[in-house]
Image 1 (cartoon, rainbow, N blue to C red):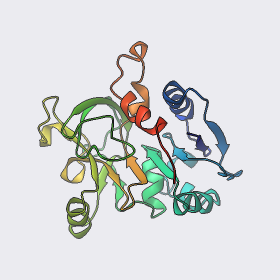
Image 2: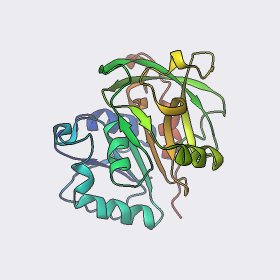
Image 3: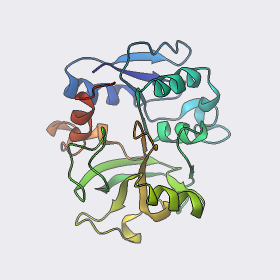
Image 4: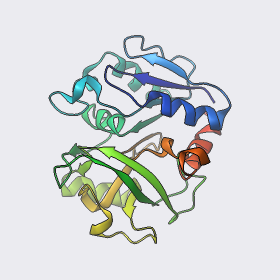
Length: 230
């Protein structure tokens, strides 16, 4: 599996993402400056977290207008996979590659803490090394992680089984107290209808080695390492 990480000005999680991908795939991912936009030969493209363009206007809004997005859309159209984490998720919603928006956290404070995620479906290229209903830990680091969509969109996501992850307690209960940023229906991650695009707010790449404090996030990258793009 060949992966590439797209780096925009202000993105700062690309090295964490590279470490996670390398640990699972055994090969270093390509680091792609957003102006280069050559995604030829890649199976997976990742947009990592950070503060692209300083989060001016709205988080991800400026990056979503980059010429690189045309290449990213073409990558998905030809069957490639796309993962957006934190600011990457924000960019994907701003670009229309995933529905909804990421708003200011409900408490209007930046959150830097661990959360627990419940796996809502385990039959995707991103989640198949987990079990449905399994709970894993992941760090949060965002000020605008409050997932929002209108009721019709939320109902469609639920009806089409496109909610990948929800904020939950360590025991797997989906409760308001486990929903630190106020996301609609405790949604932490969603999928595109093709199941080839996934966005999530927490950072599984920061828990892939015991030296990081745990390996809860590693199954996601192990799943991606086994990708076979048609």
